[in-house]
Amino acid sequence: MNEIMKAVRLHEFGGPGVLRYEDAPRPVAGPGEVLVRVHAASINPPDLYLRDGYRALPPEWHPEAVFPLILGTDVSGVVAAIGDGVTVFGLGDEVYAMVRFPSAMMTGSCAYAEYVSVPMSELALKPAGITHAHAAGAPMSLLTAWQFLIDLGHDAPNPFQSFTHRPIPLAGKTVVVNGAGGGVGHFAVQLAKLQGARVVAVASGKHEAVLRDLGADQFIDYTKAAAEDVIRNADLVIDAVGGTTIDRFLQTIKRGGALFLVNPLGFHAHAEAEALGITVSVTQVRSNGAQLAEAGRLLADGTVKVIVDSSFPLAQAARAHERAALGNIQGKIILTVA
Image 1 (cartoon, rainbow, N blue to C red):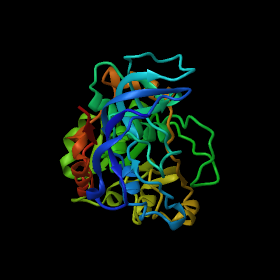
Image 2: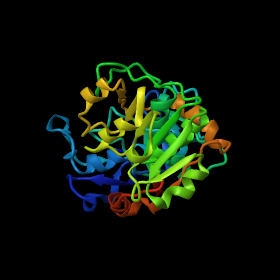
Image 3: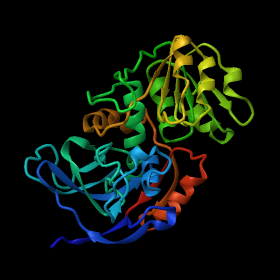
């Protein structure tokens, strides 16, 4: 019989109120897996979509859920047990990971819990010098920006397009980040700047000071000016917002440039983009321990920073989801586990 832990579980789809903090069976580390005692987890958009039953997505993407299920992908914690065949990590190691994504995106990756089992290949040592809370804020958002802008890191089929997404060289280029204040956006600003780009950050005014500190060369407060009225001849726009108005950024991009869509739903101007000579590309983030290890060195020395919007105890996950629903998030929302 499994030991018991605390976890936040779903027994039905719905709003934040369906999240229940309760007893659940503690997982075990199977072959090639590591059991992590979770110190912190973070909130990501797929958590919100799954909690809601993916009603915002096309019907063919709706999950066949088996309740109860546990949300969450991003964790930072300590190795509590190791399964057969695990040679890279040992008991007591501090680690972080994005757990089983996208393979478990419809069933839950089980991060909102005191313990989670993680495939060894998805795990990396936690960056020294930053807290578990900050480390937990990195995996999905940082890997998304990394796989869009630096290295895709896999050869899995792309569910959104017929061709493989390819990052482009950014040295000396002008890169626009729309939604720059959020989880993916604030990492995209830093990674583009790290590669030598001139970075234009688009967000609401409350984010300006933070984004300039992270390296943004120009800031556009979208509540005061339309970005498409200000920007011309960008080499790349990476959009971390989504929606049906993203085609407006096509007029800001030079011929031969690119538009990268973190959330492609709602974008339908592919013919217009082709006529303008603009490449539109999408990819789906995938768990990758090796990339987290590489990015971890940048987090450890402060080259890349994790911005924390707010923090809630695991038992108050519903409040954290309510905060997410308000929008205008600066960085990441964190769940701490006692």
